[in-house]
Picture (cartoon, rainbow, N blue to C red):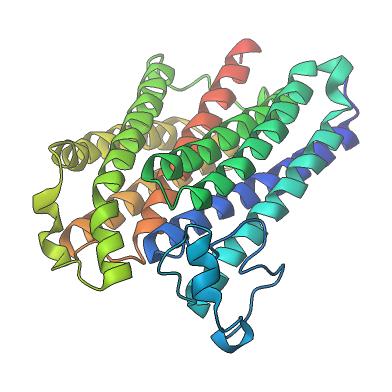
Amino acid sequence: MIDPVLSARFRRIGLMTLAAVYLVILMGGIVRASGAGMGCPDWPKCFGLFIPPAEEAQLPANYHEIYQDRGYADTRFNPVKTWTEYVNRLVGASAGILVFLTVLASRHFRRGDPAVFNLSLATFFLMGFQGWLGARVVANHLNPWIITGHMLTAFAIVVLLLYAIARSQKDSLAAVDASRLPPRFKTVLAAAMGMTLLQIAMGTQIRQAMDPLIFTQLVHGDGGDRSLWRDSFPIIFYVHRSFSSVILFTNLWLAWKVWQNISRDSLLFRFALVLAGLVVTAVLSGVSLDRLGFPAVVQPVHLLMANLIFGAQFFLFWVCRYSAEQGV
């Protein structure tokens, strides 16, 4: 039996870590959408400094030649892009520290439920791999496949953290009354999770198709009319756009069933409302991307919503699972 105080401490630290990882995902989307990935052309330092300069005059006069010799041709200091990338690195480092604290807090579960400790430890190692991938992104001049791997690793970290947190609280989650939900609710929820994963996978493919156009516009100032970019997209773009309707109605069905059958003060009810709000926001941001010429400000929001949707679905699934195990 785990001490309730220690369990609550793990939950608090775990949720803080989860919020930090979601912030990492948001910052990564901002960096990618704004073209700030090479704002710091070296790693772990930025222009050879632990704290980057605020203006070009603080750099050596021949810094162009210095970085050209290192394989970074056409390096130009841009304070906005440099500090955007630098803040992204700071957020990532902060998340790494919180993951380490999560591992420390999970050590009390090694006897009562070792899976919680193992999941936390796996998250820690995956976070280290994520840092290494971040360095590879810079070293490989923003290779889109490595960038996608970097984002998917963050997604995997979220899944591990969520499961560790849910498992650590399974006794309290078992008290949630899900008995009035229809028998097929969990099946539809599992299908909705699969749909979300498929939609995210298609989104990464679309993003990779966009990268050359975005790079041309941000770096060379000649990306053409953004509203015409869709003409260059693969057929998967149109599948992704149409599939969003299926995802919308599936998740709204889930939220409606919870609304009909679950008490208003239940954790399950609150999370179902959050899920519905996230899905609607994701669809609206997707429509904005499609109709407004892929504005950079909307891209990270759309990415974050997709990750939050799966997180909400995943948590709801485990609430239902632990409730069923207790025969509620």
